[in-house]
Amino acid sequence: MTRTVYLNGDYVPETEAKVSIFDRGFVMGDGVYEVTSVLDGRLLDFPGHVTRLTRSLAELGMDNPLSDEEWLAAHRKLLELNDVTEGMVYLQVTRGNPGDRDFAYPPQGTPQTVVIFTQSKPGLADNPQAKTGIRVISIPDLRWHRRDIKTVQLLYPSMAKMEAKRQGVDDAWFTEDGLVTEGTSNNTYIVKGGRIITRPLSNDILHGITRASLLRYAAEAQMQIEERPFTIAEAQEADEAFSTSASAFVMPVVEVDGATLGDGRPGPVATRLREIYLEESRKTAI
Image 1 (tube, rainbow, N blue to C red):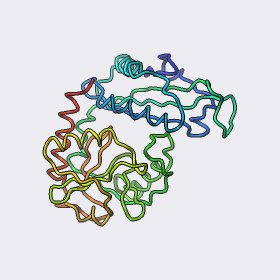
Image 2: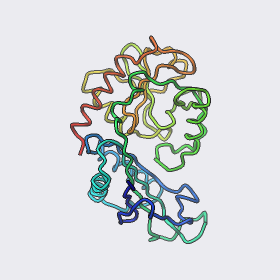
Image 3: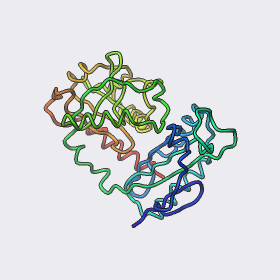
Image 4: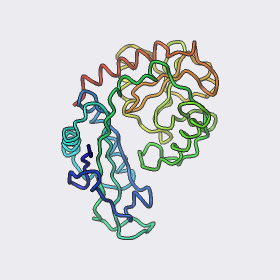
């Protein structure tokens, strides 16, 4: 079945959705995006995603083309039209089509390009990797220094994921000045002596929506949290490690740069946090 997608206010078959070759998202990577997970036909952490979208747009000097209510209505409409009960909704906003390629921003009032589409992912919450854990390698972080803005500039993370696959593992963690920043598409954590350790928010990492919810749930569960940078060596000596993202929720990490963590299986903290996140986020889904 052909998906219905949202393009600039219209709901059209994906085969009919067209964007100009001069759109700045295409020629300049001048755009931002968000991905919201869907479980039981409802959106997880949606207010957080819309809030971050507004912030990302503002940091790039772009307006938010839709209200929170309009974003929600469009997401729900696409879920209904495409009969998605488990999966993701992707949205993207670019600075639009200036009529030709130019480094200068287009004139004020140039219409932005707004795209939303769904991805059906049956079994998203029951990802088998959550039961086995994943293996990661470390790679130097060569991205720009505004990683807090969720832009569509994803070439280097894609290259890092492919390098991880080339080396026969699942993902990569970026390092800078000897410290872990984040994963290719996730925030990173280690667990030592029952304490959850994760890098604090700054321009160096994405302000993860799943991260914010998980840390809140962990605090409510009386778990100890320490927000500070950590090294790969610390990760290799940790009791556990894991990552968080909107699409993978909480994903245990069982190997870092060839070093096995614990007994090589997902640890109790990561396992419990995944259970808590799925349980609590389902309660607040809309």
